[in-house]
Image (cartoon, rainbow, N blue to C red; front, side, top):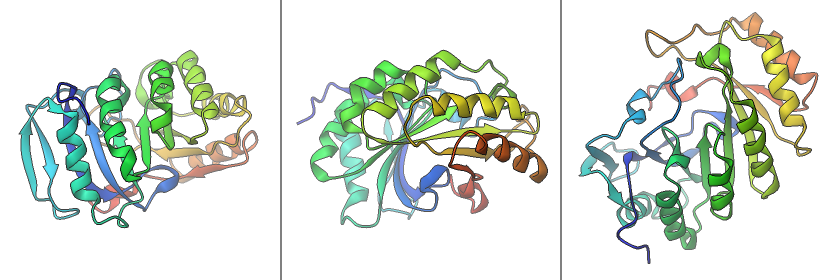
Length: 257
């Protein structure tokens, strides 16, 4: 039983197709939490930076029939909303916890995932990779870590190198599947990508690197790289790492959130 007083702020819970990373194309339940400590120029979910008055909860998977519940939600209510989309099982590969930055609400996330664990739901955490202690506390509840590398050429902000290194060490040690995703723009250099690749190499565990061309999402968004630049960036990283992939945001291609 999850204590009713454990509450958190949620943007939406829905069923959809994973559009990013190494699990692209698979069906996931998405739990999008509110709040973010970054202000990336390319952000494609700016509404998740702040807490909405209401959380949107899908009733039937893929039908987009939402009900609105006032924030904050109790962990019990959030867990029940996920289970409502999960049963009967078989349709979804995992629960994708995303944001915003989910690790800004570690107690709420722990309560929700603890309630879901007996139901055998695999959990994929999408994170900006800057909160290693929060990840350490939740490591027994997470099966897949999708960690962002925040390259300055895409975010417009200095890359948090030290936090990324510490986070990646924690992620690689606790036994979960791990991959790193770096959004790249027309301004991204081979030197930036090589630095990220060397950081990944230090963990001494096979960790794929996904280069994700930026999707223009607003006035501040940087321009995407050309095909030639993508090949150059992939080649630079591949000189260091054995598994480097270029995967765009495929959910944007089909008009899905």
